[in-house]
Amino acid sequence: GTEYKKTLTMETLNPQVKAVEYAVRGPIVIKAGEIERYLQEGGKKPFTEVIKANIGDAHAMGQQPITFLRQVVALCTFPELLDSPSFPKDAKWRARRILQSCGGQSIGDFLLLWSYSASKGVDCIRQDIAAYIEQRDQGVPANWENIFLTTGASDGIVSILRLLVSGQAHARTGVMIPIPQYPLYSAAIAEMDAVQVNYYLDEDNCWALDVHELHRAYQTAKEHCQPRVLCIINPGNPTGQVQSKKCIKDVLHFAYEENLFVMADEVYQDNVYAPDCQFHSFKKVLYEMGPEYFNSVELASFHSSSKGYTGECGFRGGFMEIVNLDPEVKSQLVKMLSVRLCPPVTGQAAMDVIVNPPQPDEPSHGQFYKEKGLVLGALADKAKLTEHILNAVPGIKCNPVQGAMYAFPRIFIPPRAVEEAQALGMQPDMMYCLRLLEETGICVVPGSGFGQREGSYHFRMTILPSAEKLKVLLEKVHDFHIKFLNEYSALDEAQRSVS
Image 1 (cartoon, rainbow, N blue to C red):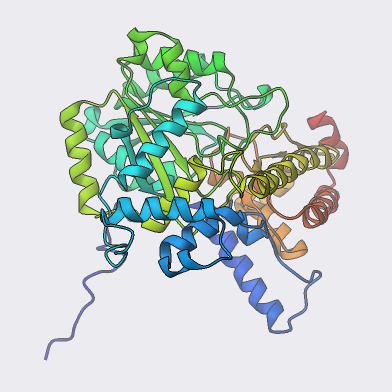
Image 2: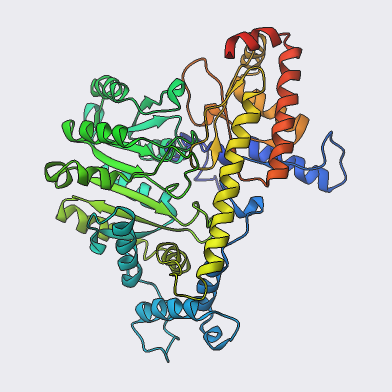
């Protein structure tokens, strides 16, 4: 008889899927997992544990959850706890409100809860988010009908890109993304077969966004595609910069002139550490530019429960606010979101606590702000520590970590090491990071996974490990880098190149 042949093979696989790369969970991380298992089975290495600084997962790195957030979500998931005396009144009040809004039921009947919510999210949570945005932006109006809850920010970003990508050949949609970027963008663009249009951030100027560079990238891209979207990550991932208001204004002016749809990834808006920096939302700056701008530029902004001070990655909570979207297109977006039914309701509840934290007259206020302050204070200290220790290493240069939760230091890789990497068929910073992992147990991601200027090398590391672990990590990087330079006899050269 005939034998069964697999239908789905690497030859028949959707080629766009093959084109996707996602560095923060890529080959380095797989290798780190293998080393961890080897150590658990009693294997010997020059280190006792793998320190993972590859992904922005705060709780995995030991950050404590915010009590109040977990209390509200627990009450929502198990309403019998509403009778328990061990939960504070303000947590119960929030849970009841969410539960009522979910099933539209009286308090007595919670059995209908955790059915699917509306595709856009639970109404009362969307209203809370609108109130939060108005407060954050000092009175700029926010309409809750323009707010959609999403499965983490990633899901919102992909949904909006899906609306924007169309056309063939020269008419294909070009998506302008910052380099270095968070690889969700390059992955989504590859998967949708759109055109990735790189604009480079200015490393010598603390990763600032330079509007001349936007013009250059746009003009070059116009020759082979139709740039329609401009993505910005602020505060930056992997670069940790916080954009100035003037810079945001220039970017919005550029988007207005060239009719670009603006996607503002603002998931790190609570993570600002540098005393001379402040988070400005794209929407607020757009409003301040006057009605001509505020009533025309199409803008989608994104937020998440995974970052900030809560670090609740597993709930997959997030939202997007959409401004100036064509009403018929908005209906199409709702249709598309309906196909996925709804974002996780637990994630929606977590998001609600973030936008509606305990007020000064509520019992949980004190503990909540103490916990929030401790998390953000520790991150600010670690941002400084990381920058200082890395800059003391010959051949490493690190911009101030103004915000977010990453450092993206530039590393000098000696020409002989570059040749060796090329002979092995790998990127020089990939070879560097693999060796760092093998010799020290430290897992960071090579800059080539995020994009970088030709001939420059970097790695991205999170500042999430505890201060003790972070010190160990940075000291190990220091020693490894000097050893690496000595091995390729380039210590003197490195000291000259970076200073």
